[in-house]
Each structure stands twice: as C-alpha cells, then as structure tokens.
Length: 106
Image (cartoon, rainbow, N blue to C red):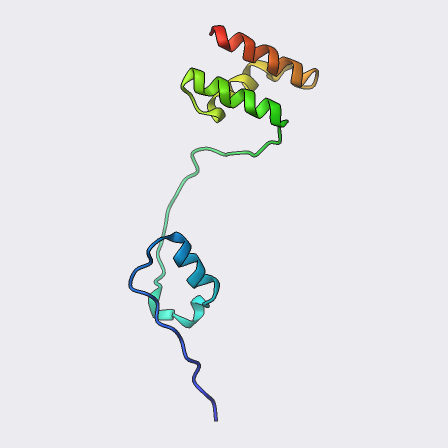
C-alpha cells in the first residue's frame, strides 16, 4: 500500500525574496507540477561581463574616483583598461595609480 506524500501548499504571496528562497530551499518543485508552465523565450545577449580580481587598495581608489566623476566603478575601470590595454602586461599597478591621478584632472 503506497502512502501519498503530504505536500505543503505554495503560499499565495511571499513577503520578500528571502521568504520565497527559504520556502523553495525546503520544497521540491517537482511536487508542484500544476504551479509551473513551460514558456518560450527568445533573447539575445547584449554584453558579456567578466569578473576580475584586483587589489583591495586599487578597488578603493576606483570607488573614490568613480564617485568623484559621477560614474560607476565598472565604467571607470573599463575606461582605464581601454587606455592601458596596449601595455597591460607591464607595471599594471603603477599605471592604474598614475591614470587615477590623471583622471582627477580629466
């Protein structure tokens, strides 16, 4: 004789993402086949994003300079990398510090 597994109902609404995450961390979506539907999606990637590791002091300088310029840290970092790119293999840290000084006058 097989016992039917008790499945908790999905709450009508979650108060925040954290509550939803806690619920789904402890429940299996395969137990709720009627709660989901298959959809077709067409998308194109507009940009690629890359994570790079930089030294903490460089990150702090980038943040300060970006705030002064009114741009995001990513935008400032991109601009600096584009400027430095031809010589990126040598003296990277020195060049970033030098360029940050130059950007103050930009």
